[in-house]
Image 1 (cartoon, rainbow, N blue to C red):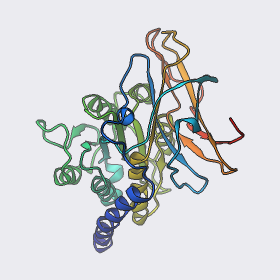
Image 2: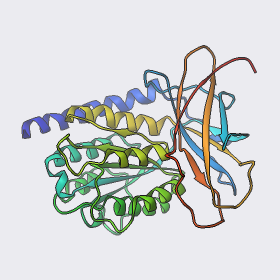
Image 3: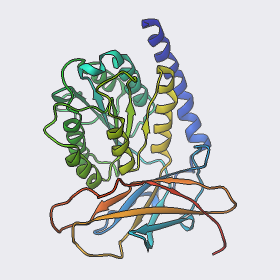
Length: 336
């Protein structure tokens, strides 16, 4: 068993170096020049910013689209795109690692998955790591809230506990709070867990509201087998889809390699789209977002982005009455 994981780690190191180069050379649009006004989305009062991933029916990322290819709808009403960009910008990333007792049989998989993602990161990313069982702790030293160095992050992941109950919601809440102090425009969480929770002070409703308000993209990797009584893939799916991320359920260690590569490609290849809502009411209500693509030819594309947001002000926020949908099919191009 140890040999299998050692070989897996070696394959990960080699494969991710190649995957990172391939992602940049094959699916990335050239980065904008420094003087390009679209190189950075300037935050404006009332501006809604979306991070959109666009794929074809085979799951291949689609580059080269322009602002004119996209349509934005809020509660069914068309919106004017104010800002648009597509480039690899540095990201604030938090790794949330489940170290509870239920994860003991999968602990090696967790370490491999976390370390693999770290190796695929942009050198200009700022990252942190959260360990949790019934307690929540940050893996990096207190004086170092973020780092772009691989070794400290790998050590933080290796130190994750493998005993106790599971406070998944508390850990995600703490990670979302840490993201607020990040300095990058784009913010992401990667959660590696079985989805169970039996020790949190926060509820799923609390975390869902916090996640939607954060504008962070959450990717979840579910590690469990069919006999795992603690597993809850529904929670992992809900967190990912509400924020424009994706849930992955690897069945073997070999599947971790392409999964982490896919997450890295997603982060590197997202379109950033911003609009000012036509509905200016500060009522605190949830507003559903739909993104469509007009694309020449008959190929249908899938657009993945956050499902909605809460308007400012108003009464205390509540979750949407229906599970949000984040996938929108492309509209075949039909002229103007």
